[in-house]
Amino acid sequence: MKTLWKWLPNAIDRRVRVAAWASLVSQILIIGTGGAVRLTGSGLGCPTWPRCTEDSFVTTAEMGFHGVIEFGNRLLTFALIVIAMAMFLFVLRMRRERPELFRLSLGVGLGIPGQAVIGGVTVLMGLNPYVVGLHYLLSAVLVGVAALLLYRVRTGRKRADWGVPAPVRALSGVLLGVLGVSIVMGIMTTGSGPHAGDAGAARNGLDSWLLQHFHAWPSYVVLGLMVTLTTLAWFQGVGSQRFRRAITGSLVVTMFQIAVGLFQANNGLPVVAVGIHMVLAAVVVACVVTALLAQREPSIPAGAGQSLPRETAASNS
Image (cartoon, rainbow, N blue to C red; front, top):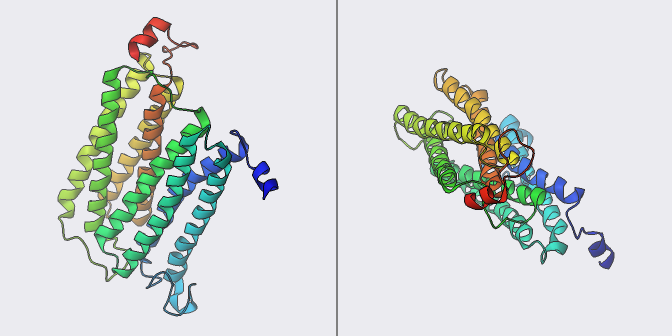
């Protein structure tokens, strides 16, 4: 045990960085595999939980293709648990020096059983659309927490001062809030549509056409806010280089996300497009969280390779 304790890192090293990246990527990946379960009609491929059938924890030949898809998604949960345990162990010796890493890794780790339980309740309730939506929402939150964990691993402790002025911080807060509304409305829209995860699963009974608009409008607001912040970052010298990259990445992914959304809405909701749309939403969450966190780094004027003068930095804090 003493040998294992000494083997664990006492400072950020490659093991910690790899585990942090794996935490984020795996949280996004399970959204993709969960979407595959739903879009292939495999939501009840394992008709009970925690077993796959009444007599088996694993899928059987009788379950066929749908059983393989659903059981494969359940197996990925164990991969997430292994990654979360590794992340937790890798920051354990740093819990006094870097308590935020300890708390964040613990939060991600505790969120995974929560995902599993809600997924099980989803199956036991015959794919109730509201429970399915809650499952996705928790996954999106865990993506955000994993992005925060990765950012802290890469950049260190939270800075006391801000690197952007108050109006930019306010716009960013609005961006995060409207993005949350867009995701919730997207969940409601999906819950009213044809991709229920099983032919016999209930829908939420709401007007899909109307919900599409309620989902699209906040998405366009998100796009407008991102365009504004990206313009300020690159042409007004607002924020650090990392902020500029993160907000630009957010904008690019969001533009692609909206294009996919428009394509699927006008082409009968093809399953591949819907799946891509679900995954891209998680990627947008990770990018936006990263951009907001990067606002605490010192601003670098557009085209310059050094920090703002002390007077300017002080005025922005």
